[in-house]
Amino acid sequence: QPRSMQAGKKRKRVRSSKGDSGDKDAPMEVSSKKPVSRFRQVIRSKGYKPRDPRFDENCGEAKPHLFKQAYGFIDDIKDEEMRILNKMMKKTQSKTKQSKLRQALAKYKHEKKLKDINEKQQKAKSDWIKKERELVA
Image (spheres, rainbow, N blue to C red):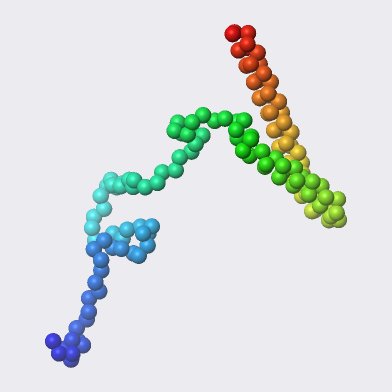
């Protein structure tokens, strides 16, 4: 067709059949002209499914002594943070900053106290189990 005849006609926009919006995570565009079904069809994707090792049988048994061995350095870091908080509390003049530091220090001390109590209980329990095994054997 000649150019002069083409000028009077409007061009139609070409849309993709899927209603692709560009982003793969965006919801799919659905025509508003189609009636909506009463029950929605859910399509399950067979992608990556995260597992929690605490509850997964494939991950094996929890071994607290190995955990303590592997992450023992965290206790050292917390002790160092407690020393730093003590120094900062002594240096600061502001009452509000001092109270915040005191609260943080109290939190660390409380956590350490609870951890020590828990370790003592675990130690006592393991000793008792060893004695029981010796008596049975």
